[in-house]
Length: 85
Image (cartoon, rainbow, N blue to C red; front, top):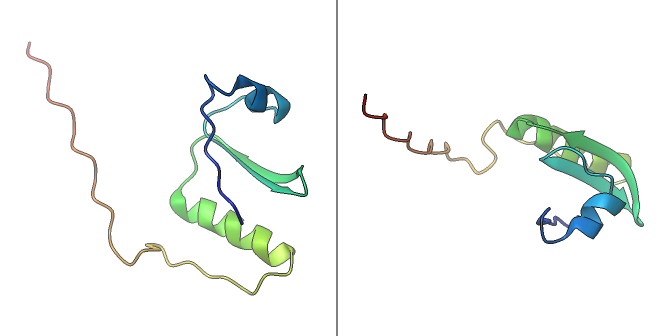
């Protein structure tokens, strides 16, 4: 499975040809044809579940993901400073 990131400003031709209307959009394609996709905000667990389902549907060995795939808890990004009133 390959993962690609597309710059929607610089690569508008790809955005149009793949019919991307929402960011983020995750598309799962085989031989150039989109079979499955997820649009909008998706939890990491839901994304990993979809990846697993797509792989399993195409004959890959059964894959299971833990709630924290790397085994380490993610660090939250620091909050922006409060605006002075």
